[in-house]
Length: 272
Image 1: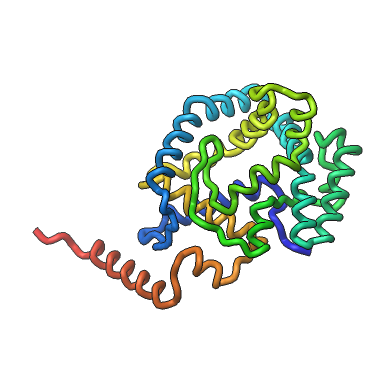
Image 2 (image 1 turned 135 degrees about the vertical axis):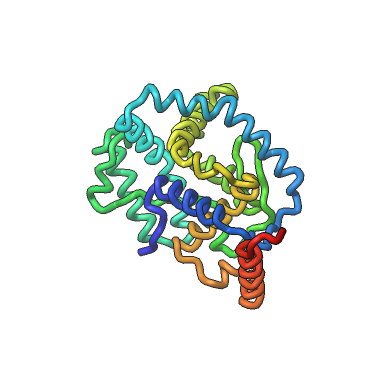
């Protein structure tokens, strides 16, 4: 059995761990693969402004008017609705055991869990395991491509951007909107509600960005590390890490020497 991310919570935890690790680095990884950085920074600034003006205040208000139990029930509902995305991608990744287990989880929670608001499947040893079309493309061998920031979406890549139309085609929220022939603002309302629940869960990790010199680089590197762990089920090989960092052993030794020299200079008493 593969070791996937077992919930959205660990994903947030993994991102937080990446942020902590990156914050402690004096020498940043040399690989950027960010030829569109100028455009990406503008999109990052736009998304950050939208978050501060609308998304974050909405998430804060949502937390104020709901109890932890209520938020957990709502999160369960949205997670269950999105299970068809995971199931189809399990099949595309040639993981029949995962596909069967996640199908069982979807059936159990949709029935015994009252449309997914409750999660009896986890107690029956069928934990939440999510994947997406971006991971599928990676396992098919498609290169990641340059980093990209998309308005209202955030960090992605040339490969991962294809997960949006593919996963939407499998998302029951999209099916419902299409079947009702809703107008654009109403069609996106369920997805916006889901976004608010995710943003509310990220409020506690905001202090990790305090003191970060360049939040854009922070998010970019954290995103790439998180996706690497998702693609390799939490156990990326050393070769994949080298590709992510753009280093081999000689490069790493040089970076360590540079770091050591930098720390020695800082430790020397200031001469007057």
